[in-house]
Image (cartoon, rainbow, N blue to C red; front, side):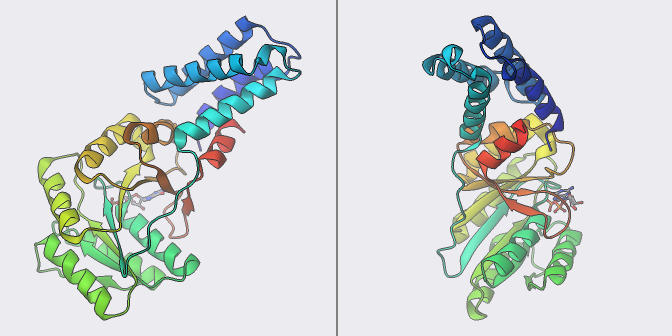
Length: 295
Ligand code: GDP
């Protein structure tokens, strides 16, 4: 995960790590390298620039040049700033409803259906909940079948209505089914398209207004870099969602999406997907991610 970024940051900070004393020139050079590493990881220019400016200000504020181990202090400052950029403390999901309704949004292929299954499995096994999955992709029968396969794997019921072409009606019926049968979580998997378009946004917005979910989650493929950030912005403008799910972090992703998405939409990353299996889900902790990136 983020190997390239980790290597580059390590190299940038290495110069300082070994030194007992460092100069302003060392610091400036290092920050330039840090910025380059962030840009290479597909972090946008302004965010990378602001990041290094903040690190510099903190370093000056803490008199980094006169401390005993300036290198280590710089690494700590970079780590703290990275944590802050990715979202500070971890936030959970709102499970206060009865049932709690969780609406999944995102583009086709982002990993929505897979993540719906992972989340159902996680809530069932780790939080002792009784989830119901609801299939609302009315355009692709294969997507409904896929959710049934996922449900079968994890032993979670899937509500679907293949002849029905109204996702609002299906989601409402799914929630009614949950209430009638003692489910306390409803996870609604919706239709995505390959790119942001008006019809998709209108549809998800109509579902959102009709069912008023406790939690609206936006799922995005971390491999898509800056596109991930732009898509997040488009969905957030329409849904004002509660959190982001970053998928495919097990792949060779550069890291830009993970680092920038929080500061662009001001919504926390709540979970990450780290593989195709149902168990490949992790709560997102910004500080652990910063540790991982900085080694
Ligand atoms: P949807 O169209 O948004 O519902 O996306 P899917 O759930 O069908 O996922 C699209 C593809 O990505 C599938 O082949 C999934 O197995 C794969 N996928 C989903 N999440 C992850 C993940 O975290 N890691 C990896 N490597 N693959 C994933």
